[in-house]
Structure formats: C-alpha cells, structure tokens
Length: 339
Image (cartoon, rainbow, N blue to C red; front, side, top):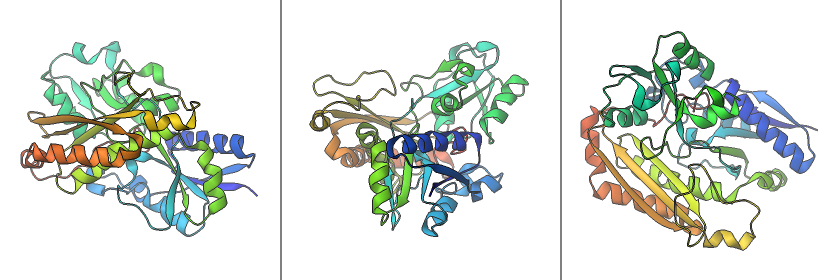
C-alpha cells in the first residue's frame, strides 16, 4: 500500500514533495504517491499579507486530519508558529541555501541596477531592506509561480525580481540568478529554505519512518528562527527577518550562508555545537531598522530565538510598527511558489 503525500500543485511544491517522497522510499522501501491539494491561497489573487498566516497550509492539514493523506510537505516558513493539536512535524530535512537571490535584466547585480529600476517582490521584508540600501530602486508587488516571475524580467516589464534561492535551486534554474544576496544586505525570512514534513501525531509507525529524514542542525536552526518570529508576532507587526547558522564548538560563526553541520558526525557532538542567530525588524520604508544577535546551544534553540526577540522589543522593535501605516505583514512573498 502506497503512502499518500499531500502537496500543493505548483511546480515548486511538486518538486519539493517529490524530493521528500524519493527520500522516504529510499529510507523505508515504501512507495509514495503525490496527492495534489488546492489551498485557499492558490485560488486567491489577493496579496499574501492580506490572506493571513497559514492560508497555504490549512487545506493540507485538513486533509491530514480527515485521513485523506498520510503526510504533507510544507515550505516551513508557510507554517503558523502556533502548534496544531493532533499533528506533528516528524522531520525537518537538511535545509537548502536560505539566501535570497536577484534575477535581473542583462545579468546585472544589485549594485549595478540604475536608480529607479523596478524590482518585483511581494515581501515587505525584502522591500524594506532594498529601500535601506539607498540605491533609489522602485519596488512593485508580484505574485505567481517562479516561471511567471522570471518571464516578467525577460519581457522587460521588470528590471529585476528578488526571490528565494532555494526555490530556483529545487527547480533546477539556479543559473538564472544574477546574484546571491549576502544576508548582511538581505536577511532572509525565518525558516526560508527549510521544509517541514508533517503527519498525524498518533501515527507512530509513520512518525518513526519519517524521522529518518530529520536533520538535527536544520531543526535547531529553524527552531531558533521560529522562536524569534513567534515572540515578535505577539508584540510587533513590522517586517521581520532572521537567520540561524550552526558552528562547531569553538569555531564561531562565519560559515558560508546556508552551510550546516555535517549530518554524519557522532550523535553526541550536536550538543556541543552553537547556534548563531541574527534577527532584524524594519520599518517598511527601510529608514529604521534594529538588528541584534544571540548565541546558544541546540538544546536552547527556541529559547535563543525568544530571548533575541525580547532584546529587539526592548530596543524598540515594537515602535517600528508606527512607521508601517498599520499594515500587517506575513514576511514573505507567495509561500510554496517562489518562497
């Protein structure tokens, strides 16, 4: 009997789900079939920040609870930070590169774009950081799948777009990026590039089988980033960014963006590794920003994020909401499509 894996129908969602399906089959020998689920977010053309958190995962979770599917794959950043009764994140596979990338006309880099160039992105987080660079760029909201976004650059409608590197990589289109953006310039959304494999909490056999896909360093990094997000969501509605990196004990941060501890190290070694978490909150116009960082151990991952959030709020992050005109933000563009 095949396992049923629920997925959205976008090219990126299908690619991500097939990756997980292949890994499950390789680890367990059990066949997996993909079951496409249409979500409310897929049916709406409204800006993502108006649709609300979780709009791209609710239908998948409903299908899980109704036992129409056995497990689901989500872009982790799509998930609400609140846990869901009766469901469990059974595995967090190794993360793809979490950075954002620029895809620009004529192969231009960000610094080479002329003033007044039109850059497409639906993320307030990205808009704020682009404005903060002082390059005189214009931004415009975009929705749609990766192909439609890339076509808008190729046609000359847009000078450039910004999207997640993981999305391009998983679609085999990495070569179309003209620049990978350093997190010092463009800090990613919490959990960007990570996947969450979710199933029913009482399906003990499947929980055990899926655990073979779990990557402890990625799970710890994402826990820290989502702890930051959860705490800030309670007291701040400004654009939020966060990135946790893992460094071996005593080595300090500074590995290439997206690099993580090798999964084949001794099991006990993980407890000695450190998490280096950077977090930032911005005003929408990019004129105001607060950036701070914290370090800690795997065991304290969630707490590291929450403590960093408290530091940011104490430094005035909640007041940045006043510069945003009262609008809420989901911190990224179309989840599950261009990430």
